[in-house]
Image 1 (spheres, one colour):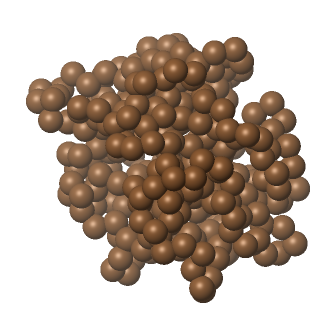
Image 2 (cartoon, helix red, strand yellow):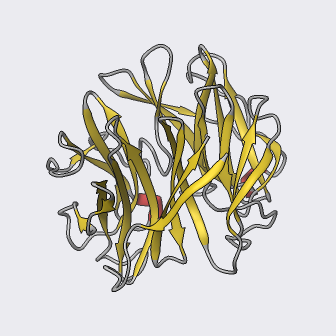
Image 3 (cartoon, rainbow, N blue to C red):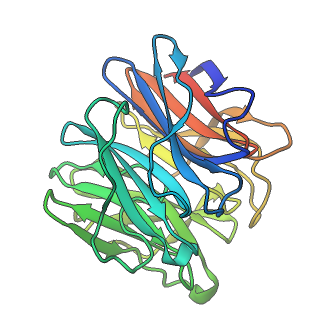
Length: 315
């Protein structure tokens, strides 16, 4: 693999004092769309969801696309569904009580619909994707990796069959489960009906869970060999079946968010080999998001809470 581009989506002067939690999507025509939350500071009521489009060789000026002024916004997730771009996001405070809304675009992020609740009346702490992209699986359903942060942090997968969302919990049965926090899973399907989740944790390791029935039920979580600093991760299954993982490989709860590294697995995530470091300096390089399109990886991530980086890697 070869890094062919690494650039800031926006430059100086900064459009907002802080930004975080970016997501990216790529069109068949090569256009790219990125989104993130931004404002004076995470959790402040002026934080909104911003987007930027890449076309004709450059990124557009960032602009806010959510109209709910005065309410905290978090963790946008971009996904293509039914011929539209869907932008999911969390809204509300505290995090334990946030809920999920979404807007849609038919013109690749130029214009957007009015916001709607993903699951009307949801009071469970946010349904649908919490950080990482959904996946469409072999039976046609969409699986969204979710989690809640009320009490011990816990993961779930939301299944969308085109009519409704159905929540399926990922069990935590390890000794001392009440002290184990797991959130923000990332998903892939290895073969028909066999779905896998890698999961952020507070105990120094990326954890994993597996499903053999299209995500309807899940194994209890178990540790992998990959370190985790209790910060966001993301993965994608390549067209050749290999699994790419982006993470901060630091085995310490709330440890440094550097380096930010890319790993690959040729055995369905049983083990990973480091390919390259995207960042190695002191600082905070975090919350990666990755998709594959046209034989390339398209990646976005937070740079010191001030900027969003886009990186492109030839596979």
